[in-house]
Image 1 (cartoon, rainbow, N blue to C red):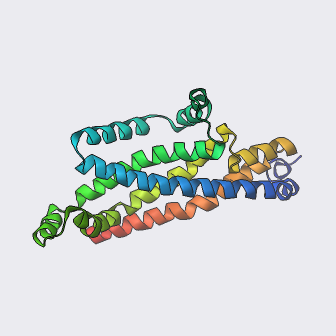
Image 2: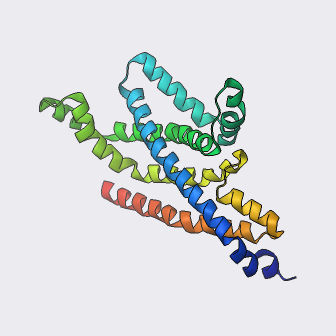
Image 3: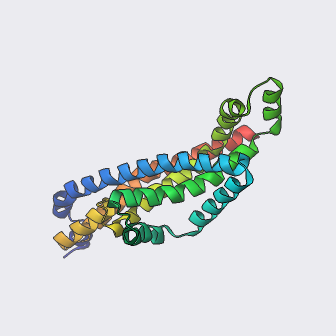
Length: 223
């Protein structure tokens, strides 16, 4: 048996392709939900850490530190397998999405915080001098400039979230990796796993290049 029959078997690939596409759709949906929730939660955490009263600020800092430190795989296992003992049962999708979102929001919070702090204070002072309220200043003056600054790191973080969706297979989530593993077992051939790796590459490589372009453009504009 040649290396192509073992690792790049066309017959096996065509037979298992529908299963892989089903897993891909689940992976994309899981990634999109986790990224959106992570960005929203991260922005809320960043604003809380920067401008809330001390007790809430300390809670935000603790949340960010804990969920940046905990391994995602451990969090997935805790959410899906341990919470039922407390009477909280989540579906595989809900467990994976919540775990990914919690970790993503912690990282996004630090990215947003750095972006907000990078906006010159003179912008806020000028808005205050014009009579704008604090939240109006944040929404119309500070955040638009901060978001422009954080687009490259936020994109990188989103790529990491998409890659981490592969860990959802540990909670029986029928994502791309889980479906590829099942297809490999059914066909007794590793071709589905290589095909899944190729799909991940095709999906993520353009995003990786986009990050490089954005970072280069931002660096040029700052000169």
